[in-house]
Amino acid sequence: MPRRQWRRTYRQLRSPLAWRIRMLFWGGAVSIGVIATMLAIASDQAGIFVRHVNQTAPWAMLFLSPAGLLAIVWLTRRFFPAAEGSGIPQAIAMLDIPNPARRKAVLGLGVGLFKAVMIVLGLACGASIGREGPTVHVAAAISYSLSRFGRFPGYVSQRGLILAGSAAGLSAAFNTPLAGIVFAIEEMSRSFEARTTGVVFMGVIVAGMTALVLQGNYAYFGSVSAHIETLDAVKVIVLCGIAGGVLGGAFSAMLVYGGRRLGSLRRRRPYLFALVCGLLIAALGLASGGLTYGTGYEQARQALAGTSETGPLYPFLKLAATVVSYLSGIPGGIFAPSLSAGATLGAELARWLPSTPASAVALLGMGGYFAGVVQSPVTTVVIIMEMTDEQSMLLPLMATALLAQWASKHICPVPIYHALATDFLDKERGRN
Image (cartoon, rainbow, N blue to C red; front, side, top):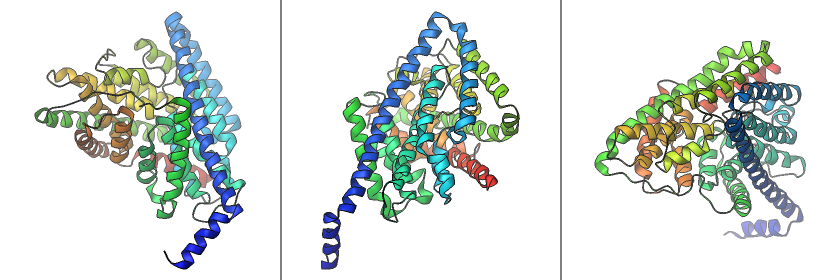
């Protein structure tokens, strides 16, 4: 190492200001891990509440869901309109918005904390939403807010903090550190810079370790035992890749184009629109025996264990419930519901393949559907591998994800998060 570089490194190690910045960033990453854990616990409790209501008085959901969505939409529009939706499109969009005032309006600490509370309330009234995408928004807000308390180096300031926070949020939400890093590169690659690599890695490591300390070392869906013979692999890959890609692409198209077509109606009659969406969510829940409420985690776990009993209509009912929940205008993500719909789709396809283990088909169904939704095959493969602790299915899953991405693009040409981020940017530019 040249002498000049040694001197610069030595000065940085001795600099109180540099250590203050490091401690501030590490503290923010710890906060992300803590809040991700708190949101996970609160979301689980909300799910328990809905299951209790569904078991004791299922028809009460016809009141709870519409009233809950109406209250959430009113609170969101009244206090933090930027909290609406998944949160990942907002984080992507803010990388391209240089206006500090608009960034603060979307990534303020108040927005992030409000969104976390609304997610729990949404799950408590039966909405088919996930917490993982919103965790990315909350984490990006926490990380971005650090720029108010310290002077970060130019290549880290704001854009780098948003990127690092987003990756750390996904890592802490799923306990998937590699997926957090890949997500930052693949989903947000338009703004990824080599110099921010260390910042992203450090954010993921500290936030992930904090979540591990609080929740223990776990795989999101537990250890899944899945194996598939080489001769069976081709037909399963083709079936899961095409079916998952088509259905996942259709889901994405419904969210993107449905949001654009219904946008004016929702703006004119937001509360009536929320009431109707709430009634539809309750009706879908009653039709499915309460299975479509919430994240769908339990249904996905059972499918991966080979014990799914959801029935052939569940993937389609779950898709519909998630579309309605998202279009209603409440805060909520699509990660967990998509994984649930995909795993159960695979479990149903496994009935056509009696010689192939159901858990293996469910795993590939999950990968095909999720890759069809997000059109990010590398993120799909890494996140599912880390969530299921199953490495032997790596090559079949890669092939399924690529095939699903190809099929999905014929239905929804633009990846969902970038399409939604573009729509969000258009709204932001319309305000200026």
